[in-house]
Length: 112
Image (cartoon, rainbow, N blue to C red; front, side, top):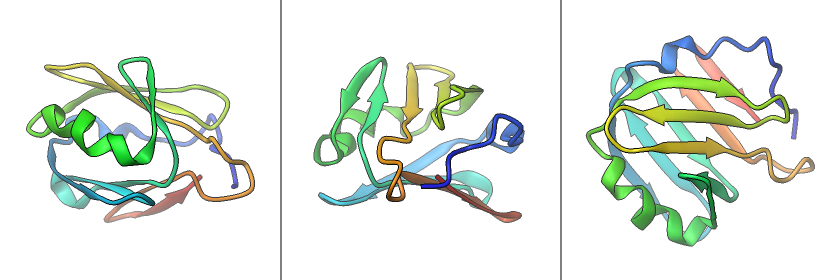
């Protein structure tokens, strides 16, 4: 939709612990501590495998209780989140015409 600037500071994500996942066929919500939430509205990549919305809850359920160790901008609107005990989740800017994901925290919201 708007893309993600490579200059966007996502340092606030590091150390956040995934506490819950909820979703349906159209949206997946990841709830972290400290009021951080990520909402997915398109496919994502889990450990390098492209995963459609309906399958994301099951694929991400083992990540509950894990914390984000690091993040990396892909330069194409994507963000790779590396979790401490499991693997990685890549947020994709899969549809340039519509919202793909958003990240919200106490300081604001980023819509991609």
